[in-house]
Amino acid sequence: MKRALVIIVLLIAAIGLLMNLDMVLNMIVSSLIFLLVLAAILYGIYYFFILTEDQRKYKKALRKAKRKQRKK
Image (tube, rainbow, N blue to C red; front, side):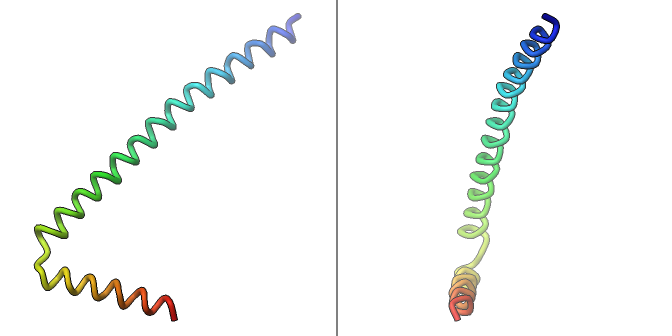
C-alpha cells in the first residue's frame, strides 16, 4: 500500500514538473523571440539611419566578397 502511494505521489510530482517546465520553456522562447525582434529593429535603425550610403555600399561589397571567398 505504501509503495503504491509513493508511486502515485511521484507521478503527480512528475506531471506537475512537466507542466511547469512547459510554462518556463514557453517563457524562455518568447523572451528569445522578443530579443531577436528587438535586435533586428535596432540593426535596421543602425543600418538605415546611422550608416552613410558609402558605408552601406562597402558593407554590401564586403559580404559579397566573403561569399565568393567561401565558394572557392
